[in-house]
Structures are given as C-alpha cells and as structure tokens.
Image 1 (tube, rainbow, N blue to C red):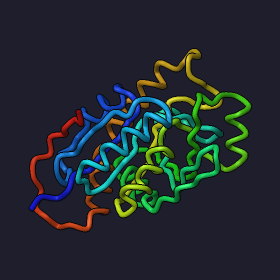
Image 2: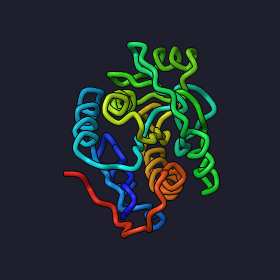
Image 3: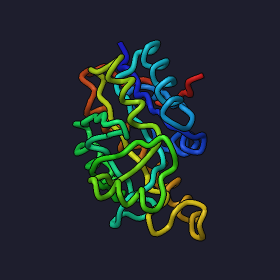
Image 4: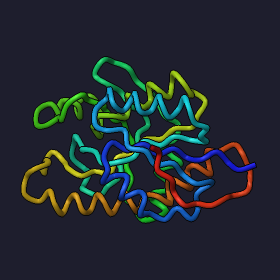
Length: 218
C-alpha cells in the first residue's frame, strides 16, 4: 500500500513551474501539483473539485505573495499559522512550526505569522492597515482553499506558505521587481524539500515510498 500523495495548489503557472523543478526525491509518494487560477472563487472551486474526487495525504497551498510590513525581503518565506479573509473567517494552522523549521534547515529565511486573503490586489495604505491588524502576508487564494478543505476534508493535514515577491517598499510593477521575482522563484523551487519533509512529518501512514516524479492535475 502506497502513501497518499501531497496535493500542492498554486494560483499561477510560474508557481507550478518553480515547484515542478524542485527536488522531490524525498517525497512520500508522487505529489500532485495543480493550478487553481487567481482569486478566491476560482481557488475554492478548484480545491473543492480536487478534494472531493481524489485521495490525498496532505494539502499545501504554496506560491508567491506580498509582505504587508517591514522585516521581510523578496525570497523570504512566510508560513501561515492562521489565514483569514475580509469577511472574518479564520483558519488556524498547526503546520507552521514544523514547516518553517524544515525551511530553515534548508537555508531559507522563514517567518511565521497570519496571512490575509483578499479578493483584489492590495497596495499602499490597505497593505499597511492589514499589517496593523497583525497580518504578515497577503494573497488571493489561501482562505478560499482552506474553506473548501474545512468543508470536505477537515482531517487532512494542511499548510500554507508564500514566498515574498514584493514588499511595501518595493511593490509589483516598480523598478527592482524583476530581480525580486527571480529571487522568489528560486526560493519557491528551493522550498520543495521542506514541503516533502513536512508531508512525511504530517502523514500518519508508514507505507513504503514509491516513485517521486510530480504529476500535474488535469
């Protein structure tokens, strides 16, 4: 009997490409990489379809995100200990400490803290307001994925990480974004062994390890 695979959800194709190029040799089963598309509605629909129809051992939401306060640089990883949205829904996560530890063991700079999921691109004053409320990162999908997870597979271990691609001092589409994006892409690829280590840590099964070549969900 093989171990149920890790399902990794990303919003964008470049995130999938970065993860697919990472080192999956330690994976507990062949991971499934799937693109949700941008925004909460698409993310929830895609996550619900996959969770309802597949057998997975753990779920990770991984990709790029924005830091909302000082102290983070492009290429840093922000691991969520809670994800909230603009309607007040909150999803606490027990995975933050082991995943952040695995990232740090592999030389990445990892921060732990709350993430906020918005339904639009957040900039300027709004970003600072989220930081004042305690958030470290903002994205447009994680809370929606976690809502589907809570509805369909609440027993499934779940983790959320965002690699910082822009900061309040250097927002997207401003000079310096291109090298920041390259650093973030490399960091996301380098995070793969930490994801597989977290999956092994989280999995309750102890079956033998099969092929580790990633698949892509259709």
